Image: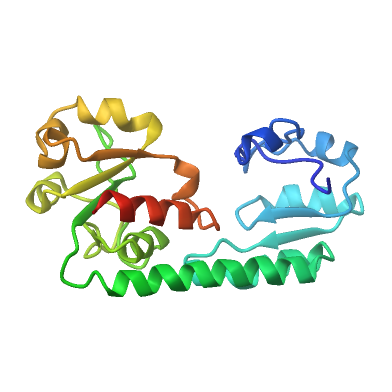
Length: 228
């Protein structure tokens, strides 16, 4: 009931976000529509343009940037910060505690998988524009590790992966966004990967894995189930 406007990218939960007015994306914020809502505060990502922020602040509305985190552990202070902003400190503390407990259980479970890991490849991008996956020190790399898998991109320093290296690794399990599944499995040379031929390419909702959020736990649990 406190959320009166959202971005074009806010899709979860579907039954809730469908009823809330949208004010554009990261680079095309409809400032006039936003101001007309007369919000008490605007929460933004740190990528939003300074000009947009200044227009909102000049109208007398406070703007608070929520830093994009790169680790699941960093979500705990973020949750608490949002709780302070909304005067819901107790609820935020409880939410953060539950998240921490679930994360710790997953971490303990991953330690029991030592020596029995399978190679997992997350398809960030593919095709004529190049192949991309999550490299080392990213939250997706962390998620795959917490699921008890071995990230194919864990030795990479950038999001680019050569096709030669991908086929050399020949992952046991491939995770891909729902909307990309059909094109990937029917496009050479990806169609000749062992995981494709053996039916071990699995779709996933992008919102559970592409950004750092509490929903990452859902993706970790799903990947963990897939590798059994």
